[in-house]
Length: 361
Ligand code: AMP
Ligand code: AMP
Image (cartoon, rainbow, N blue to C red):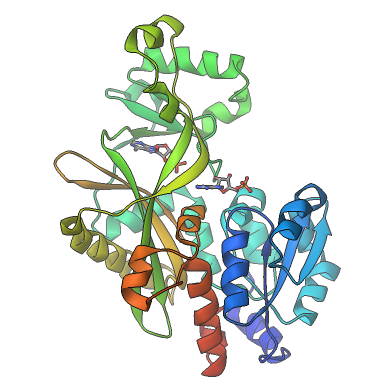
């Protein structure tokens, strides 16, 4: 485990008036870079050759460092170069999708905005469940084995796979049938079958609130909400039921994009309380708790019950819907505030108050 002592040693070698904000070129990088530029930071993009076109098209990265794969960021010389640039890394979904927890917590010694211990809690479904239920939230039931399935159930693969390979079943028999079909369609590999997580499917609409736990302001801010646009599940309603039955569609959940939402105002007090209790519990499980952005994945039913089925302890790509125009961020900060910029603002304020050590790990 990279200790905070080690990180503060590295920070002490930094020119804190010339910090660079760096992230992997994917997921929410444009959001992060734009925010960093608007707050006056230098920016560094670590990306693959094939994606360079994007980070040139939107000229937000002052330096583009090409890697063959994202895990190359772990090479000691590469990390040394980043620290020489006074880099603060901003973790996002591609860090957890393409690096494993051990790599993130033991091998990446570049100071990272946020609490890296919580990335481990995010990656482990049992730990997530413990965290969310200790916060007093309503969670969907989980089933340990397919034989226990007795209601509509969603089968999930581990890690941030973007919903790829997920499927529904409502009995042990339909589960086995679906498994065969998913393998045949190449959406699931045989070795992943034993890693499947089974969760009660909650019927309702998806709502993904975005929060920011500010160490500097000592507050949990509510900055935006999105929902997801997922293939194929969001396409199925366009087919008449008779065709759906005829071709035996099995909905899958591959994320394609995000859509902003303004919520019914009377739902907000509960969502705010939920965010605050998640942060409170995080303080006990991994002090100093959440630093910066986090997001909950919820389903809200027709009784207005809020079920929370997942947490991301870092920026989510859903916050991209707020770039330049996030209404909830507007209510707090006025124009042109959004998650990437909120991150940069926190770093700027921390540097000014000589508190950088409190917001990076
Ligand atoms: P990518 O670099 O696009 O493969 O993204 C890395 C991971 O982040 C994916 O495996 C997805 O789980 C997640 N992700 C990417 N884009 C989005 C999005 N727009 N909304 C939600 N999750 C996303
Ligand atoms: P996840 O990878 O956990 O973010 O889930 C991907 C998608 O599956 C979500 O955006 C939802 O559309 C759907 N989903 C996941 N879990 C549930 C659940 N317990 N009930 C209803 N829908 C779910």
